Length: 218
Image (cartoon, rainbow, N blue to C red; front, side, top):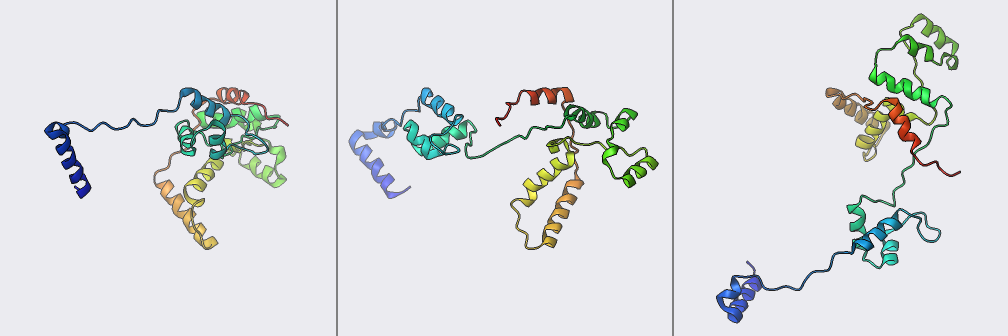
């Protein structure tokens, strides 16, 4: 115990006796919590357009607008998982066969054995003649094409994204060989306990959710 603490307890005993040591000394009340109306105003403004020519709300701009301290605005944002400085976009596919390709690729996850119907969907006309000849000699191999702006349907692309986030983005590599070594180590670790990407929703549910997304302005 520090000396100031000992002196404080001695003073309390001198002023109030034993009774003063048996109960906490009354303290000044803390700050009042932010009114729910103010919190709702911060949330509504954050989800709307910022003032002037700025592209997004900053903590200081919001604090000035609503009359709160910066750390209070930041606390409200954290509690509601708002990050107005971050930008998330979703590029809608304009592929005329988008729905058909979604059903095809998602169907592979739900029914991994290729059937003749899948084989007929193969867009062989888009392939090089030598490739088409090879496919003719190997009918068990079937190409399933992802739609334009639909790389999120490709399990390989999802794995590349995961590897980028977990190993590459924050890594330090002094040469291409160093990068290759890091990737190979990551692949080995992943393959020691692999977990395949599996679509848990059928194609019609995925398409219905995409239809609910707002149409971007041109």
